[in-house]
Image (tube, rainbow, N blue to C red; front, top):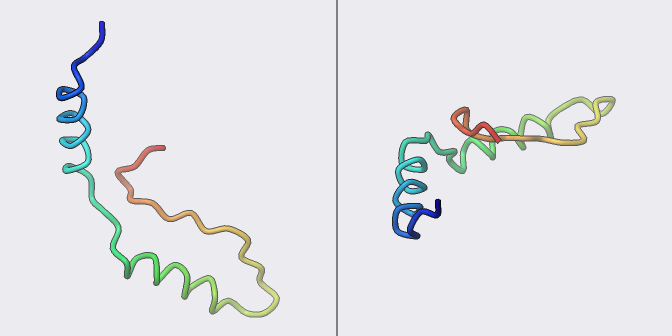
Length: 55
């Protein structure tokens, strides 16, 4: 069964509207935290996502 495009778009919008979103300050805080580690600490990756996002 294939859903109509407008039904899929409405479902995607509903899901997105229910999620908490990250703000620019959230990303800046993560970058500042990584950049301010002592010289002997290597931060190789940062993954920042809202807690409602599962993938």
